[in-house]
Amino acid sequence: MKTFEEISELVLTNVMNVLDNCRGQPEMFTHYAMLLNFLGKCYLEEDNNAVILANIDGNTAIMSVNATEMQITKLMSVSQEYVMAKVMAGAPEKSMFN
Image (tube, rainbow, N blue to C red; front, side):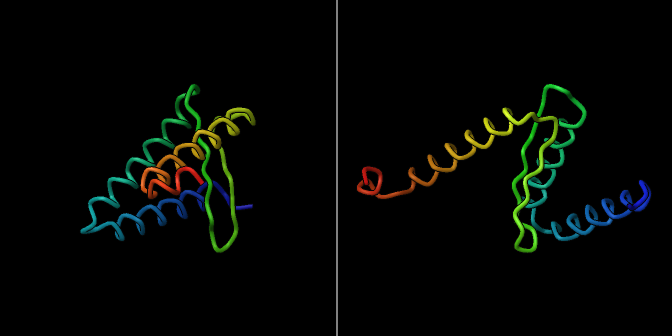
């Protein structure tokens, strides 16, 4: 198992690499900053929670921060409803009724 220092170095390296990638791309930088801010709040404030769904190297991973199984289920359900509403909002009228 890696030490705290090794993990910290890896995290800082990854953050710096992402920030380098964001140069000249203010929307990407803003999105990344918001993501880090939201996750930080979930770690620092007990009432906040998060679920992260990712596909890394072809593998799907679900991680949570300060979330019980029920909170994870609720967040996943809300996210599915949100995405479906966005998809359907852009669909032709006929598609909405099929």
